[in-house]
Length: 185
Image (cartoon, rainbow, N blue to C red; front, side, top):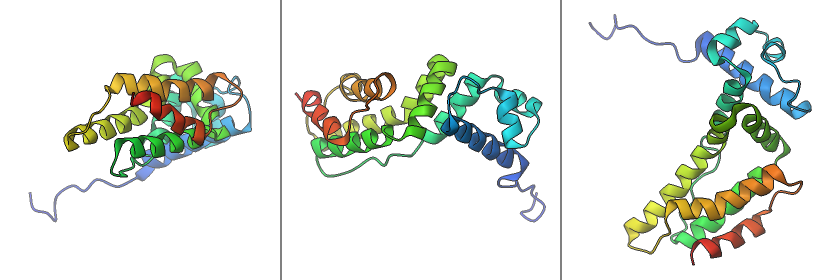
């Protein structure tokens, strides 16, 4: 088949527009209030699509919230490269803490975990865990001492997410940077 007769896939198209409209509708509805009234028919109406379309693509409100969270948390924080693991972790932890102070971020996280269970929790943390792994692996490649990824996740992501999700006041950037000392002991 020549290049001129090859079938070209359309970037975007209806599928991408529906996905964007549904994701935007979820984010808007969560920003407006409680996630308790968040249902697929409500999201579909806000997005301007039929509820069947949403059910067919996501199946349940939990799956939809997990998809929106995964989309929101993928690539939102840049992995720093300051030249030292301490510097990288401090900058990264501060950036994550700042992000977790955003009311819209918190609403999405709480709803995703509440309705999506483990899948929702993973959607909120997988990319951040991958970032942490990348920083630790980079330090190991430089020949420097680096903690185990599980230990680092427990000592950084655990407190950051706990404070954000389960307390009225998420930890701030300075507090988050202070957690790095415990990780590097």
